[in-house]
Image 1 (cartoon, protein in one colour):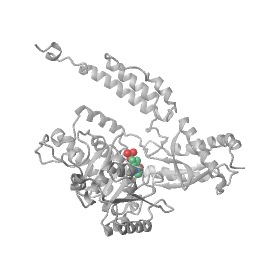
Image 2 (image 1 turned 45 degrees about the vertical axis):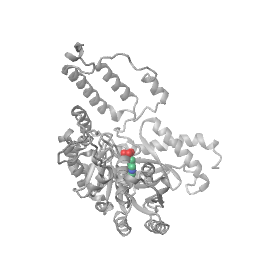
Image 3 (image 1 turned 120 degrees about the horizontal axis):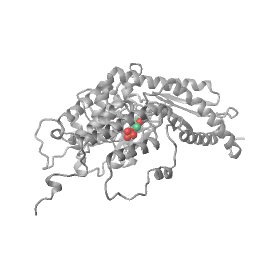
Image 4 (image 1 turned 30 degrees about the vertical axis):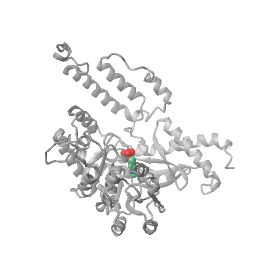
Length: 501
Ligand SMILES: *Cc1c(COP(=O)(O)O)cnc(C)c1O
């Protein structure tokens, strides 16, 4: 049987002429540039229902049997996304910890996918692997972490923290836990009650179980209570448990609090514990001279997780896991199967983390770090912090608003009708309901976007500014908007509510 024409003169349905590629790509670039221009005057989100979004994109449509022309498909995809998305690149988007994406990062993603380097092994990605290694060193340098550290890019903060958690587990278990499993070893991990939910996933998927987490209370500034920590570690040792890991927050997700890193490092040395810093959101603020003192001791950590898709403004996804010693990553992840013989003296990233094939996440970060340099980043991060502080201070000008916290670039506050006593516990439930509903209205309205936090039992609106597009005017416009929506809602909700008189 002779090969048919379609493989002799290969006619592949996916292949297109370079002219077609060029014209479709140029058109897309034009549309993206227009989209970025229009963004500040567009809604942050349309607040549509899932069914409206499904209808817009013809969700029930079966898989097409045959193909369609590329240019029209790309065009339709752009229209659907521009018309039905929430834009974290909008100057008034301050929800969660999600940054505005850097344009150079968009170009980096495009280029990375064109070369399609597989950063699992050096031989498959010679230049890309070296760029990743340099980017890891530069990120470490920005944090003030030893640049001889090990590190790699992963999908985000959760994975970066989990990778470091597994490195700590392998290093500190005191047995060959990778071969024998957790068995009866009662490993214990310590973190403040403000710690992000990744710790539960880490304890769960690592086989330790979430009961192994010792939640230590936080102080009035949302930082871990050191005395409570010390007491709990001692008690656990006496009970025959095996403490192995302390997690320090460098920028908690709710309020931006930074745990006392130097003192935690001392405690960890005393008890031979691994010190991991969750700096997913906040650690990069160490590069800002005005906040550097908060991060003293960061360099002593055994590992750090940091999220370039937060304060380096990389488009999603980009997380980065760093360990003081690269051998602890190998010690947690390397295996040498017979089908890999790479034989070069270089870092093969599949040895350092859970992934095998790996995309080239570092490129967009590497480009942006060079576009603006350390100084450019320090300026933008410091700008975000100053804007959050300005929001916090300006809240005082509105009698109906109560500021609740400010840390790094996070400000929390709530709406309190002027005739209600904010100290009265009887109105707490009503204020929580009112602010929860206020948040929903605000989010759906599309004029500005914040998320929520619970601050000492109070439901709060939370603005986290990780957004180099935000201006002082944007920040100031939020507050009258909240006052207006709050007033409207109070008029509707109070008569029906059982609590406040
Ligand atoms: C965002 C965040 C995480 C999770 O990071 P992802 O990138 O969303 O996976 C973990 N810890 C802290 C402190 C964070 O701010």
